[in-house]
Image (tube, rainbow, N blue to C red; front, top):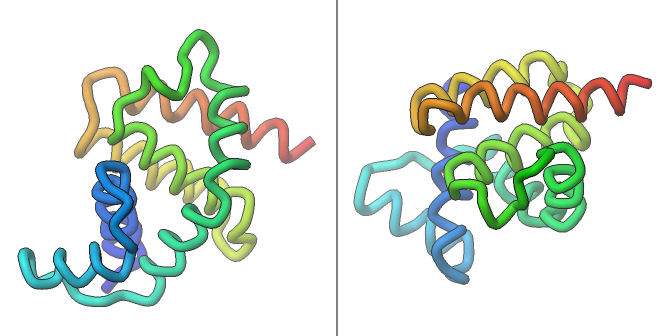
Length: 132
């Protein structure tokens, strides 16, 4: 599985997790049965990392999504942002530009018309802050 495919799986798991309190391993098991999803350590690591740091990640989203509260964001945009911000702040082996690009691509594929540019703007602001 490529890193891109792993990110997409992590996004799907985070999106599914946003609908219930079902444990992650159960969501992964159900997804494997329903869609023949292969267990991927990188995807699982990303997903667990996001779930561990959700509070800090959501604080970043609130700070940088001007005029948009977290509650107004679609679950798709929220899952993509959480995944990318986790990568940017806690996965030092992944270049920030890669995390942003992958998030924008996920938004183009799964999000609404304005999601890609919104996500790019939020992540760009976070990247500038953390570079300084």
